[in-house]
Length: 477
Image (cartoon, rainbow, N blue to C red; front, top):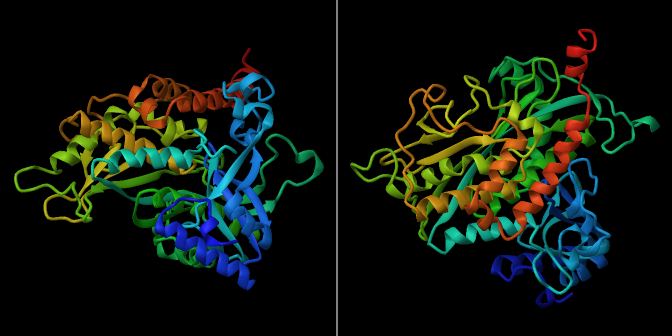
């Protein structure tokens, strides 16, 4: 392939990346390329191509079925794809037709745990070359473009909590298949309630090192590895990055951790609250600020402006104004809403505070501090990174445009009156449907599409008889 035939994004970085990838393939150092995209749930899907086919795919794209965009978290197709319009009212989505994966060669990297294999992130296009409106990477790119048009760049740093267990039974017997299948049986690495203890860290250091080495070799900006409060719970934090790279890094991190662990007899989960005794819920905190074309942090206040610059306050006002609707994108699973509890280090209402971990938005820094930022603590680590990022960009931009005032800081965030965060995924979905700014920012039809998938997930949950119901009513009545 001539690199001039590369079909991906037209940036200099992508073109240079394509040249390097072609050279690595032609030299024989890369034998397989995994062309992957983040689906509506933030799960990587795609195809693995041998070297010569991968070269062709850089200009032609990789065809796969549109039904991948029609699935809920159980992998069930929840749109009537064989009807007129495929359930989307779009001829391109009808009949399980093809969509193309188009590589963004600024993202490719060799897998440290599979050294002759490369990953490359892709965007989705229809065969006629038009963008697929349900491509979540495209949704985030469009949301960030709104800030860019005003001269702002979104900078974000990540704190990600997750659990790692030893696999005692992979649950791979014939009767364990299903949609979804039976999860593995696991045992603990740590007992929990040993937050940041050196002895506990040392006990799991060989496993943390497995992850640390490969995550850094993958090129991700890892900063720290920490023992979290719950049993078998860890936290990794990442240096701030700009634009789409924040979500790309999270997608790669989550997939890398799961693949590395699986190869080593471990099970990693980014589920918010696993059903294990004494578990602690996992959060995903996104630190964020805006900078100008010269990289200057625009949230730093001048003398007499208080904790944040006026721009920072308006951005913060937008995050709070759209907190209820955005929660469906920041915390998109049924399980996540068990985390929003008062006095729990997780938020339960839409307010902000100065350096207070009970608030939804924790303001850090101030005059003279180049790291002045806002930490949104509402997210769960299972969120689609592109939709989480997009929700912040859209909400903050709306706050800037409307010069929204976030109100005073809350010194006691669990006692200060403020709009409550949704108590269930169904409530969050309803709030998202009512949020005009998020609907416009995410793109025409996207909210209906996303909510349709989540409604299917909620219906399946409501149709199940839970252990709680059986224990509560079976003997009593």
